[in-house]
Length: 358
Image 1 (cartoon, one colour):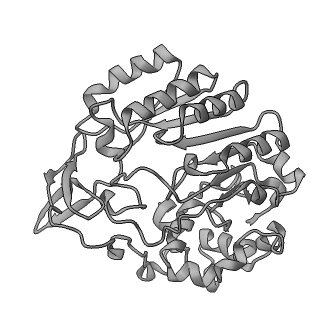
Image 2: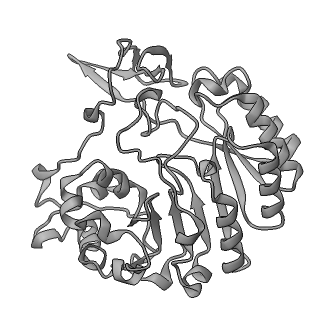
């Protein structure tokens, strides 16, 4: 399997790694506290998107501006990028902007609504509750500003989806949120909570509640799941002095070499003949998907060896998309890692197996 430029229909873009929020499960901050050292406070501008040729842009059906480390609305170039992509793409292209909504002015949001009106594009608002609860997970997002931005965008003709993560502290508001969605014409999307780890102490299993911290690492409160198979454990009240790199597990599957597994890669076409998606990081690096991007960020040794120097996969005037995709990793290693043919033995890409393996 290979990545073929004119077969790419979906692109996931990390437009920037900047963000106003301090969400406790986000990789950007440790439990909402200390900033992750991988954050560079960088962003892509409209000139980057001009590096793609017109034929490539016409073939892309969906652009997903969903940050792994940042919020696309924090970009200073977002409106210019949207204008450019709407002009260069096919008329049915869909631009998806995923945001906490607590950034920029009402005027900015009104302009965005006018720009997206009548298109297949929309904003996905991450709002986990109402005025008295949303800030508990979306830490540092102010309700009044968020709501004013949502109204300004809606009144200007923009389409919206309200994305809601249920927790113990907000589950009682689910029906009220759904009624608000009906009133204002929003779609409603119920997201699955993640980040609640199962821990073992002796012969007993527990579900770990998520500690929430301030930016000095001091404990504030816990986020709890709606329900749990196991008793809830409340560890982590001690102050965190820094971002603990140990919190980011580097996969090591040496012990399963020689065994056969099935990897359900989410970026291939239905027949698994070729890849039809790409991920673009906020420094312009072309990476197969966000899972591989996150492990590569943390220095996964296998990926570093397979992909090589990061500068070789950053799109620029001197390094074309075709040149990047001619890299041995993209032309052979990626496919071999999914099918278990790395290094001529039954060996898989650890990241692919960890995230998408059966």
